[in-house]
Amino acid sequence: MNDDNSRDLYDRALSVMPGGVNSAVRAAIEPYPFFVQKGDGGHVIDADGNRYVDWVMGLGPLLLGHDLPDPVQASIQQKASEGPMYGTPTEVEVDLAEFVVRHVPSVEKIRFVNSGTEATTSAVRLARGYTGRNKIVVMQGGYHGAQESTLVEGDAETPQPSSAGIPQSFSEHTLPVPFNDEEAIRKVFEEHGDDIAAVLTEPILGNYGIVYPEEGYHEFLREITDEHGSLLIFDEVITGFRVGGLGCAQSEFGVTPDLTTFGKIIGGGFPVGAIGGRAEIIEHFAPSGDVFQAGTFSGHPVTMAAGLETLQFAAENDVYEHVDGLGEQLRSGLSEVLADQAPSYTVTGTASMFKVIFTRDGPGRDSLEEQCSAGCRQNPTCPRYDSCPKNAADVKNAETERWRRVFWGKMKAQNVFLSQNQFECQFVSYGHTEDDVEETLEAYKHAL
Ligand SMILES: *Cc1c(COP(=O)(O)O)cnc(C)c1O
Image (cartoon, rainbow, N blue to C red; front, side):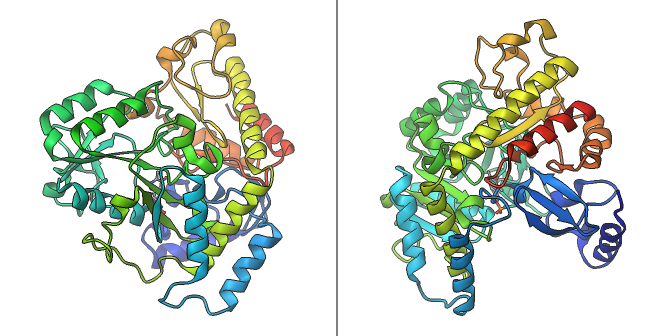
């Protein structure tokens, strides 16, 4: 596979951009990432003309794939050609807000921003402003963007910044606990209950191997936050309008958070974020309330049009049926490949998300017929239950040099583009086909 153009572009990029990229994970590929020239349905074509089945899909936003349907395309182009933005409101912001309020029951009001990071930053500030409390409980291995309050590692006793440039004194207001661990949550509420503004969690850990919640976990979070007057914030930047269709993951789990952060799909492929929730809380944002929040580009007409038309297209077509169906085919096909070739590895994911975690121990291949074949569901009767990752530590334990040095490259050599590290998940789009699934399963067979 020729990659001269990508190599030369990366060489140029290294001279003018740190690590040659504009977002850290893109440089994870060794020795250098390929540069994309354009997308085509469920595929991308790189700067040297190589074509890949693309399961990265922009790391989540591209529910419809790279070929936007005509009404989406037309609406984007019209907004762009009318003078891109104005610094004063436009109708399309109201249209998209109404659409989200209509479909996501916990969202009575919404504010649009420009990235998932901005959404979680503003949600945390809002929760602190609304409750008058300082501390935020987060899940180890959860990701909420590149922001001061959540780039924190360690545990609730000894939280530390996970990046240089963040004062230790900031990280002390963030309490990381293991996902799926009710005892750990009880303990932080016993110690800090009066000062916990919110529990902030992804409904499914989507940036760390895909970890599914155990039965009852979210209900438990709902109850304990209610008991202590803290807010429950679901970060649905990945799962929003992907898991549970237009009702989002909260409808899938039947749990109503106080606040929800959105991003990715809600902007139809353009930069976006949003904070939605109970009107009484959202009203605390300026100018109706005293929690300052603003943005030059917020509610950008091109983004709003792309998001609205994307979601409307999904509402009127078989989008979720298509992507969830292919997701299921991928996950059950992968379970079969693994049972045969790598019985200790675990297939994870749900709806249109999937990943293979290179777990080291598991049941013998003989007992695998009864496993959750369409991705780990933390089902206690599954023979794989004890070895399925339940939290970040379990996923971390499965980290291996093999994934990075051998597996990813073998998939790329077979023209399959998987997410750039062993933690980020992969996405099915409306542009993918059954042929893409078959080609990918075949590639896994050779690469594993
Ligand atoms: C991607 C992501 C973010 C950050 O969104 P950006 O648009 O990259 O700032 C926040 N939370 C979750 C769950 C995400 O997946």
